[in-house]
Image (tube, rainbow, N blue to C red):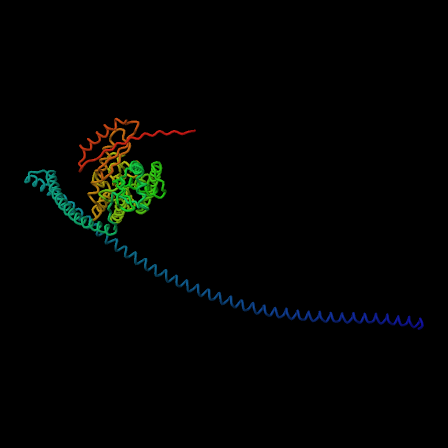
Length: 516
């Protein structure tokens, strides 16, 4: 292609591009102007419509406001009218009250004037009455020959005598009625307590039976020339009866503690198989410790069973010791527990402290747990023990008064008296013969213990023999003869007994040394 044609073609192309650009620009401008015009028209339409709506809304609001104002005005007018009517009614009521008050005031004024005149009349009458009363009194004094003061005293004395007489009659009637009712109530309470506290019969014996594995053991217990049995009897104060009873040994003693010690020691010796004096002494010491522990356990069990807490450990031990004490054949510990239970039942019936009543009942015979180491009756010993171990004054008085030695100071003391009597009087509770027997044996031991130089005393053979252990440093061999004679004479003078009593005085000296 020729260059001229290319140039012309290029120029035509350029002109065509320019013309197209101008044409497109013109088209866009026309389109924009058309859109603007349409938008302006639409805006004018919206504005016109909004103006129309606003005018309508304005007219509507104005109309509602006008209606509301009219309604409010009507309500206010009605309320004002009601208030006006109410005020008119109140004014009428006030006027009516004022008129009534005026009338009442006039009436009161009339009454006051009438009362004033009446008061003047009464004053005149009062003066006349006083004058007549004075004349009457003078006339009465003249007729009676007494002044007014004398007459007054006479009347008062007469009335006082009448009142005293009526009071005495009433008191007597009340006392009679109270005694009748008290008797009925007391019987009712006692019967109830007896019914609720059912216990077994108690009957103590003075012997214990120890079973043997075979009859050969009897010979071993007796020992060579009777050394073993003699040692056992000397250490325990118990009489061993070995007779024809098969496979059995009888232990006889009025003291249950000694009998229990001997029984435990003998059973240990039988189980051990080694029976000789040294072994016997060892087993007796062990048995004594076991019995001591048993006492504490029995005391704790008794206190726990009746529900008494806070007792001193020594009182617990003494309670346990009462298991081995009897009174007229009645076990002292069982009796004390029974009395404690009865006291609790009676206290609940009459409305007093059940806990304190049980405590007083359990401790009322605590003095019986002590042997001859303390002088005095079981009541005095019990009081001393309770004071020593810080028991309350109420408990001490109950212990002291349970046999009527002193006056009871509380209702609990009276309850203890009643419970003690119930426990002692029930059928099967006591045996007089056993008590007499044990008392005689204790008296035997007490007589011997009263002599100087006596260490231990054991009444054996049902009281037909008494064995006395003396202190070798205080009593010589020659003194033993005189001591036995003196004890025999005192027994003859102070005791009554069938047959004769053998007095054995034993003096033993031991010397111990160690090879080092």
